[in-house]
Image 1 (tube, one colour):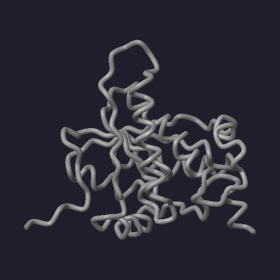
Image 2: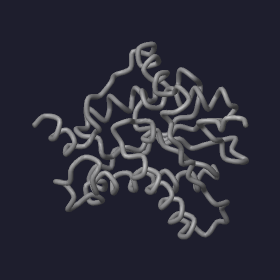
Image 3: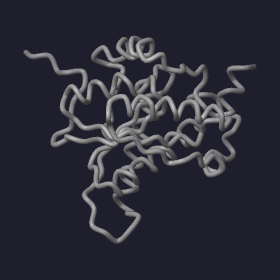
Image 4: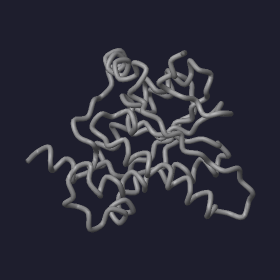
Length: 204
């Protein structure tokens, strides 16, 4: 019996809108996609990152990585106040708690909406490459985002349904390759998830 591959490409997928949380987490995934003839479009939407100076560093590293490979990179700005409203009342939740669920959904809803706008039928996220994140939370957020965007399109145009590519991106040696590329590119490697609440927990 042949062994099932660790990473399963959805049927008909030749292009994917990849929500990128940072360059280190994107690098091995992008390399894998290109090696399997799947065109990645990097979508940088991370309004959770605080302070703004930290956001700029991570954004510029992501852009540098994309430009080095000649792939499309989209920046959707730092809308931190909007993100704060999305997690309002959850500020004291622990990491991997309900605040993270709300954060994942907020970012992946915007990713799904952008995929719909660009007529890219599949979207995925590099959040699913981090061993510090709850994969079930990420997948639930992505599937819910796709469902909501398909049910309530942003405009009256006819769009093909968008599908969330739920995948554990730590598999198939990608976690080890991430660490290698981190050194090769000399990426800035952040020490906390991004928001002021996760930073507070690290510094306590």
